[in-house]
Length: 277
Image 1: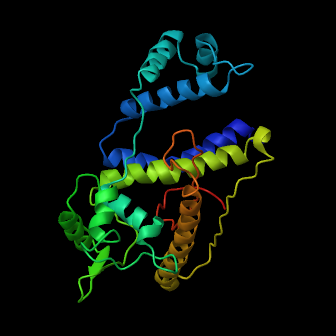
Image 2 (image 1 turned 180 degrees about the vertical axis):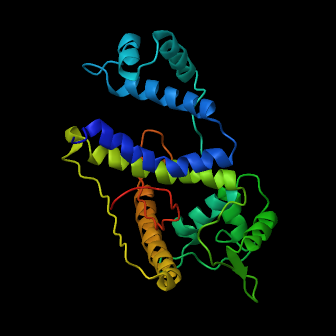
């Protein structure tokens, strides 16, 4: 018997959820805790996006769509209304300094690249960069930390140069949350839109190349080459987004449109995952 679309989608999620479950178990998050999160998202999406004539879906319809009781739907909607489940991602002072060093004209050279900055000499100095965009962090402490994480180096004349554009947070929890919010969520949102018949005309970019026939001895080399090439593309796209950011007087204006461009490299190591490319 041929599988119906619902069965096919559920089987695909059986695979797609495997890495998510690995993360949850690693952090000691139980099924009941995650189930509460899932129920909240079911209610939120059903309420906001499946209404009639642009109105929010009422409690009874949400209960019918999700299979939850009306009492449960009401509880979860109240929870959402007070903002219990809002996720806030704030850039760290280090990330902000590196971003601005690549984006602000005062700190770029004639080729549009980050200038080598004196520590404290005038308006185009590292100290001025930190004063403008580093919050209350002292320039000396910022210099020390950027050196420690390998993002800058100091030459014999005391000028500071950027050598690494991206900082990997030492706290893996923050790295995980950032990756989920800025990586997994945009990718899955693109998948959702590209597979929605009502959104078919938008055709957002979503490209994947794959092979099942790579020799094991070549994997390390391909991993390195992929990293270098994807890093180059990512930095190029970051430059493009920053250029358009500069056209706005308020780059972080909440009324603006959020965009993301995602690139990734994948190796299958889960021998229990079942799928066919």
